[in-house]
Length: 131
Length: 166
Image 1 (tube, rainbow over the protein chains, first blue to last red):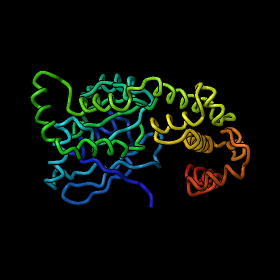
Image 2: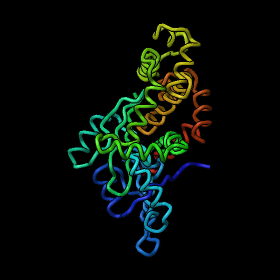
Image 3: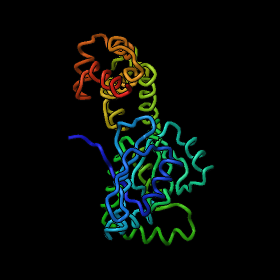
Image 4: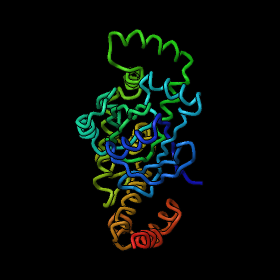
């Protein structure tokens, strides 16, 4: 058994694809039509394209409990997931210049530095630098 | 930006959500929002930080040990060396490192070396060159460990990368 896919709910798949590739720098890996305008849509890390795939799934549009859960996390500022970066402050600066909104600026948290931004598709995402 | 360890925020998320008084906390937080820009999550991080990371001496010792391993993974490293570099006892160092990184210094060193091995093999370096460049003294033990961790031998991993790029 292997971990190959992890998913994140998004309110608009195309908007999410644009954000996760153009802004965050991930690379589109799989894009399959599933009918009804839905897609099996995954992105991967630029430097680890055989690594885990992030599935941008339209669950909040079709399954109300998913939307409730997503909205509740967002309201509390809790990130849906986290990505690893080499330099949290540098990534914060880069993304801020691109217009990304942060709910938490880089903060020391034990052995990591973390910041939280809005992915514009219904989620907060945490970026983490390991010290 | 790496999509790795991407589930590791979940234990913290679940810890926050499983609190019986979460609703009360969020309501209280909503009221605070009128005067503060901090989210509930940021406030919880501050609270957890005070509980888990208040011992700065210990924290610094763990971080410095990790940095030492990161910088010297290709050399002879053992607990005696690490303990001497952080001016503490071996057993205390193991406890402190595990407390802040969730793994032992030895396991961290092995993972660091094997991760570097994959990087070197992807660059096209030979198995033996890779083996000695990451601090292993025996190709057999390197190959066995690599296979146990990655499901294939270093030579097969190298071939798979090469085949894919053709």
